[in-house]
Figure (cartoon, rainbow, N blue to C red):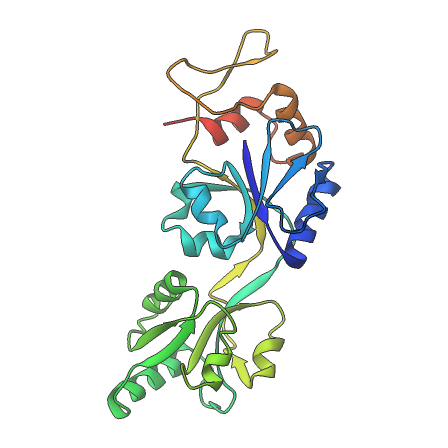
Length: 265
């Protein structure tokens, strides 16, 4: 069973701490550049350190069985995401909001109606569409369409998005924030409306490689139909440890847990 977790920074430390708190010890290499680790007592689990932005796609394709990443990235990277992955448990870390930010001097812009009016002014009087910098193209389009805002163009930004306004590459930003301080430091204000998406870090399971797994009559080991092949099937001991330490309140039915993760439809 392949598990992907964030590879760098504070998020990596918080995720490893969460697993450790649940009784799952992850032994990392002394080499910070290593992309794999051992999970003590879980010989059938392969753990890989990956950029959080890559984990959703790997889950949707079945390359990973389990993955820890942000809810925002899951919804952004996987159209109709709930057909390909399922959320198992929230980790209680990485809380952030996907918001719309505009220049502070736009004193008359405080809601979506105002933003739509500005977009029309740019199109009709300035001759070009309102430029919105974001890395969340799918979530942004879906949200703006919902409220009938169409006179805009998205500018791709994979980092320091707020700086694009200062450099006159864009007029508006749609980005994730936990405190809003970065926006404020760049003379931007967050529109005082509900966030596009409230997000936190969660553990997701891939539905791509679901496999039928059955307990034998004595429930002492697992059987799988001969027509189904898996690179590895977790042992009963591994599964019990996952249930006891990682999902103590989520799964009380062992076969249901396996069905969720491995049953192939």
